[in-house]
Length: 211
Image (cartoon, rainbow, N blue to C red; front, side, top):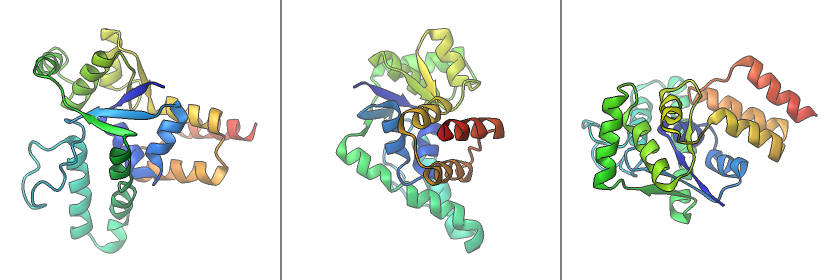
């Protein structure tokens, strides 16, 4: 089975939304592993004190540290969302340990290629550009949030195959037929992780579950 290259937002949403979010992603795509470059996540969220600057940390590490700060600073009711994020993100070490998720380091040549991509496409951020370079290395699909995002637009220009998180949800519903409670738990968790789905899309997925 092949692997996929995950962008930051896909990894963040699936890690924060559901305690089995990464498992759901792998099962839906029928793959044994997914990877991401160090720019997206490098297990570096605890590499410095929480009060220090996040400059230079991986993108997901910044998100984890943001959630930790919110837990410290907000009243308990308002901090509940962020406690859920941190709780669900505990799946990350398990996947990294068992090899179903793993971190890849770009070569010097690939770092130059990433910089050139960002110069050519200024709206393409560091994580997206790194994801595209890694997808090109392995000749595998990149996985981005949605088709109208910059990563997908650049992938099309470069003829790099890609999937979106919406494709993953459709595959999960079609192939795994989750029970309605599990479906709602993931969808509600995604909204809690700041990725709400359009009403028409949710209704279509529910319709497919009923057929």
